[in-house]
Amino acid sequence: MNIKEEGNLIGPEGRPLFGIRRSPVESFNLSDFRIYGTGKKEGLVKNLITRFRIKRWQYLGVCNDEVIFGAAIVNLGYMSSIFTYIFDRRKGVIKQIETILPSGKAALFTGSSRNGSASFKKRNRTLEFTNQPGNIHAKISADGKLQAELSFIKSEEPLCCTTRVGLGGFNYTHKEAGIPVRGFISIDGKRWEISEKESSGVIDYTFGYLARITFWNWAAGGGFDLSGNRIGFNLVQGVNETGFTENVFWINGRMIKTDVLDFRYSDLDLLKPWEIISNDGKISLLFYPEGERAADINTGLIASRFHQPFGRFEGRLTDGNDSWQLKNVTGFTEEHYAKW
Image 1 (tube, rainbow, N blue to C red):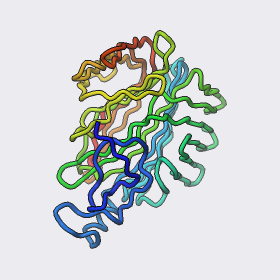
Image 2 (image 1 turned 90 degrees about the vertical axis):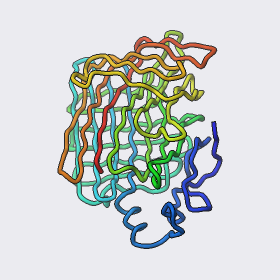
Image 3 (image 1 turned 180 degrees about the vertical axis):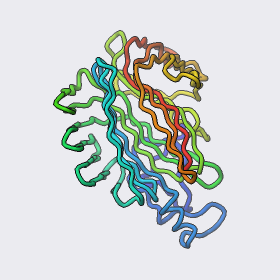
């Protein structure tokens, strides 16, 4: 792997530092960003790009045998949004809360996923994510119904990757999966205690100058293999595949990189089983959906169509020498089309 050590996103020549990093970006230093093919670091075009074309979001998820939970704060420049969901695996019922607002002012980001925060406060809906080098603390309150406080213990080997998008764009992502998480989640009087020994966390922090039309498949989750090893994986098709990929899995916190992937599923019925296979043979998984979160938004100028089934994974992971068998690992897959 081409390992980058730099703490900045933008290099001294004004272009993003592409590659895999050992640790998260410390500074996004967009003031040093130069439009591809020109020497300009200032001007109207750059101002429009940095204000309206830079996308940033932070997603935090929890999965175990009883519940799959997710929450995100999103800033698209011209729009802010948040969402939270709770999928009760025992009942097969999902409850969701979502807010979409014009302009990006409501979703506030400081620093990076290494040191910084993401927050959203509007009326009776508050999400606060505090990022520190060793952990992330999330505090969530919505509509007097949902309350959650969660602490995610970061991996010593996160996936941090910057890839090209077209000729002039870029996308940086910091992802972790299968990490310990503790705390609680409650909604409508029902409370789930989240224990490190039984639960797995997912982190997705993304910052990018993405294509106007973007598509991806994503699979993430975690749990334990048949021998009791802690497992996590982050698998993607359709984005972040230019020179480098973000496809990895973790065994007891050790990150193992994989090649490009093929997501095989029915576009007519996304609740049928999915198959996820890597080109290098390290990933061979089946996913069995139990329910899904979905939306179809199309205003003409912007669109977001996605399906995110929740369920369980089984199959095999290998590093070429050792193999790990999965039987009941929890997580989700996703099909997402965005025009933004």
